[in-house]
Image (cartoon, rainbow, N blue to C red; front, side):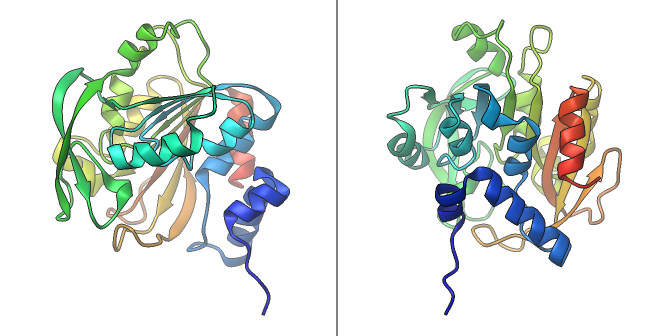
Length: 272
């Protein structure tokens, strides 16, 4: 029987770009429902292997998103308030002097001693709000804004090449806490899911329009509605924004770029 290689094996043996190419081949061969990797697309659009950039990873989980950038020599500031996820993240990347792991959560207002909720169903849905029936109070965390953090680290005059946000409902608030009057990321990847965020007061439209107002062009990566957290999900399509979701219960990611060349790279990668 032919051995099926994992994504990690492909990266080790052939590099990140090879994994991205294989993902795109799947899409063109099988259409919607195939696996897709938005992070690989961002990596390619930025030509990340040709530069030593700066990435901010809000909701770093266990480091899957930052790994290829770190291995390409990027500086990474990773936020992960969940203790168990952070221990894994630190074990993987603690020896990299270019990776700074921060235990705080991120939102639009600083706060202390805020409840973080965890789930036994999935390590990837720790959140400041209990949106799932499996959530339970886990620990208390401090919250900072990106404006406060960048000032704290004296990074307000540096170019941020990639801002990735995956905070299980707080992505819009993370953006609201960014110092837009001083710096703008070249590329932003953030998550949407109306079922999760409408109880918090915003939808994908609010998130997208906020970025449009800051001169970004957007690509929506729409996935089929989540059947169960902790299990594989199905990807549906890429679409240029403005657009309507094919399913109002869909979830997915917004990829946003201001620079015409980066957006052109994105559009080509997504075959739009």
